[in-house]
Length: 272
Image 1 (cartoon, rainbow, N blue to C red):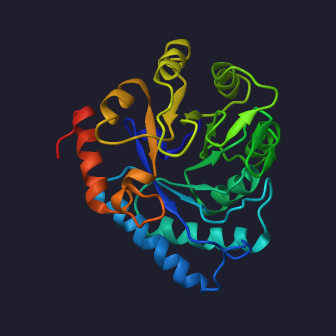
Image 2: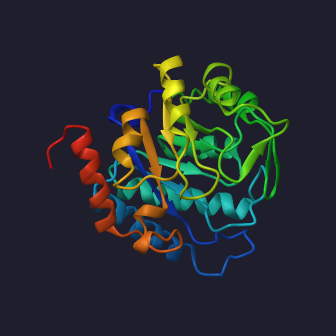
Image 3: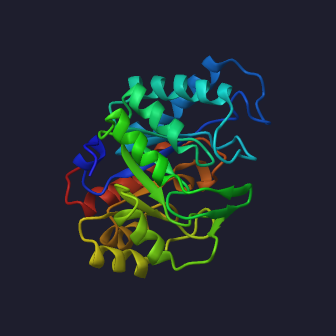
């Protein structure tokens, strides 16, 4: 288990900072990097104001995503923005480079002192809507050892939304391999699409089989669903619900963050 600050938290809720199109992406609008940084700081500040436990910075609007390495301008922009966010919020900060640029994620986290990364394709060969994703675990785990980057937690999606394994295999087998053979610090289970809830029976099965393994939920978390979800899982990543009107392309709404986190604090037995 990585020595990440994330593991100091009880059932952490990670809020998403969905960046606008970055330099190097088809949708980049040409605005200065400082403007993108200011946007990220507003989003991270709104999440912190609402009481979230950690933040994950992601190049969400860079679609269609490259599979594997992101362009150099995107990587540089992400480094600048993630560093600014880390300096501004006293919370664990992670980074995600879509789609599956896991080694550059680890380099960023190691260089910038970030706490965790999210990896889409960890132990499975996946077919996504933008092409195939190769398993990242063999190269990534060797790189983490070479860098002595044990303080960076690796959160691995298991056949995440908008992907499926080639050849088709049982979701539980993929999760088991990610924890046992791949060496992930946590696995992330999602529904088939944004906003859909992960299969809770699988979460419970994995926790029964691997009580020491961390299982996070990556979609479908709301104030109504979170009591049942956190009773089974070790934490969650929340994107859409925290946005104005619950729409993923809108800015973060601190009131919606507060609403969900109040329920989470009650579940965790924490005072206001």
